[in-house]
Image (cartoon, rainbow, N blue to C red):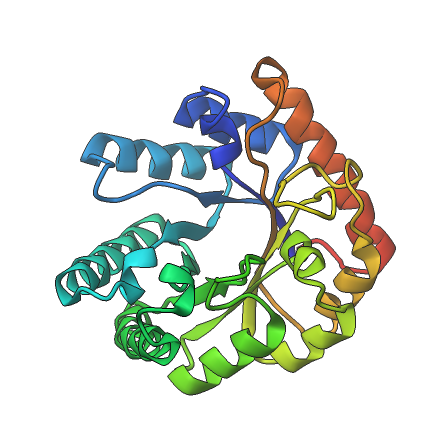
Length: 274
């Protein structure tokens, strides 16, 4: 698998697009994931991303999208986010990415007002539509498991059930190691995602709240998860997700630390780099 980085690490430290892409390559990463909203990204920025990645020899594996409105109870909001997700898929195609990383969202009003089954049904139907659109572009959609109480996809069984309900070969799972730890999911549970997963995120946490720290700064026992991931035969990338460095002025050191720690973990788990 490739070892990648989500470029939001640089943006949140106030660094520009070109700087982040060049540093990602200089540190040693094999690939990059892009966090950019096509509705907020003009033609110049899209060209900059594409040309800088090509110049650096960094393939774009994934583009990240948060689309909680897909399961909003207002049909007009759902339609907007369906159209927005298609724009994201167009951006994936433009950048030569393999997948759209999609965060689906959470049940609203503590599941008390809108029937949870209705939000689930809306998500399933919209992902069928988006799966068709993605397949037409030769892309996959990778759904992210979020470890929060009200997230639709907050554990391995709910992810498996959702993917099975959608029943589309282009709609599969992203595996986020720290999210699994926070959700209390055991490494062996990942076997249920055989043939259903296409992308991996890795970061650390304190075991209590979402953190996205460099591996080694938290409590996650990575190797058992990584060994199970190795057994799934995913051909994509393991991408480091870092959010909000406590010392933005030292972001290069922060990312470098994460890269070295993760490279060591992959070697320990027997996952070869492509």
